[in-house]
Length: 414
Image (cartoon, rainbow, N blue to C red; front, side, top):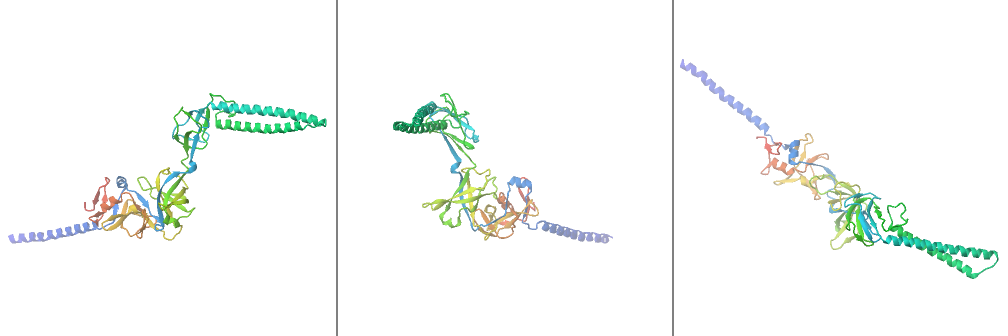
């Protein structure tokens, strides 16, 4: 009876190990499927925000035949306007530094004793002219009366000629005196600038062109001499870009050539942003520095365009030969002995694809990619180093994983 009870127990012992082995085989197969290597990394919106991940578009560029020259924006020669005193006197400003002014806006006013002198010159010139005209009228009347009597006097003819010359002289004096007074009273607040002046009168000077007040040259209320600089205004829209190119690259430059002005790479700058411009080569070159000035007149103005701001001038050959697909050079990083970049998954915007780069020529800012890239793709620009560290370990690619919202990375086995 005891032997019969042992046999069922032995059968159970054989069944349990076989179940365990099947369970272990199923678990290992699931684990192997979960650990299949992948070159995709999940980058949802929260991760992109925490890591500061940005993207740059792939561009068709003539990388090999592009010359990039650093430079900066500057004001055009006619962008600045100076206001100087026409007479010595006291001045009072009507605007402050950095104020925007329109053409015709009062910018300052002055008061001068010389204004009385100019008014007196005009009055004397008018009186002298009237006196000469009266003498001329008397002489010409006598001459006509004698002519009717058929009587001629040579001395009277000479007097008439002298009076005619005197009238011309007095008219010239009046014209000069009136012009001096008009210039002194130019843009004044009076309806008639040439009207009677008074020493207590303020003469308002108005802006001739629109712009911004750049600087005030004197103290408010001070006494200044004639021709003294009072203030300057500038029109910031009248800017140009100046770069110094190498004389060895002169064959690549041509007046009227279409070029691009691109901002330096930095926080908040779009790497794909640029301004179309027209190239003008300087008339002379620098024999010591072996450079030549390159002026670019921008076709439009953007918020980052200001005098003194640095940027780059891109000059490419006007030819379709050599046009390739290129991405920013900073989007490519070295991982061990290979170069990699991260392409945004075209089928899932919340994933990035790690790609070993097949590189071509570069111009210092853009680099040619020869494979695994399309003209409508985007690549990771800022945040590429974080993705490289997350997707590599001792120079070897990990088997996939994901980012958490705090920016930490976990592999698939965690």
